[in-house]
Length: 322
Image (cartoon, rainbow, N blue to C red; front, top):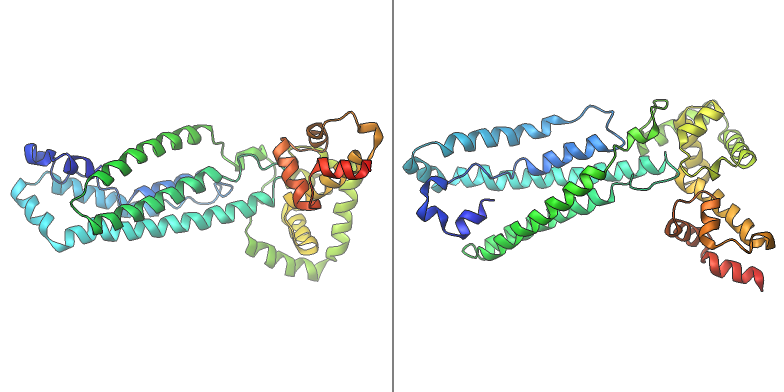
């Protein structure tokens, strides 16, 4: 926003626009961090609103400076501390929050994969893409500014790209459901972190035999074929086995070295292999087989099949036919 009036030389004709309080270096990434937490699987944790406080203080100070006489604003703008505080310090603070946000998304991904069999839009991949875009363009803008401070064309270009990105953010933001809410008010105990798995693994190993717990989980899953339920969650399984979700997740991680989603997909692919091997299912399409074993889409079925078997469903079926 600051680049546009400068690039169009509007300040020469409208001095009142000088030092508009629109330098949001301190607050853009923190706002997105709070938004990410509120739609993530960690939304039941205390929201870290404190990350917004420096940005709020910065905006208040900028607003106070803006309403000062023009001559005073000129003196302030030419001082070293003004650019350092409102630009450089704010930039590095925001980049730090942005990197922290990426770490939050990584934790979120691990927790989601340990909770849901159907991932859908629960991984918040679009949030990750938008955040990486913000970080990259922010770095580029400031590098280009350092190289060519008088060139405002690239600043206007990036401002235009930001408007498009904000529009894209708005669309995805409206469509995005709170991930934790998709558990439909089931039992608490989620989310949990990788560190929780390690700690729980030590505790569980002392108290009970992980192998025995895994045998119980495996026996139930195979006998009931609960894995065929397309939106099965670890909470559903915990309800049926009368176990804590964390114990199930810890056991699967400890025995199979994989998350809940991978474990369920493994059972689904084994079922798909069985169906593809039968002549009675020759009239089924590959997509139909995928839906039959619990996958929401053809692409998800193909990806899981290739990951587990090393080949595609069609090639597997052809090899059986030969």
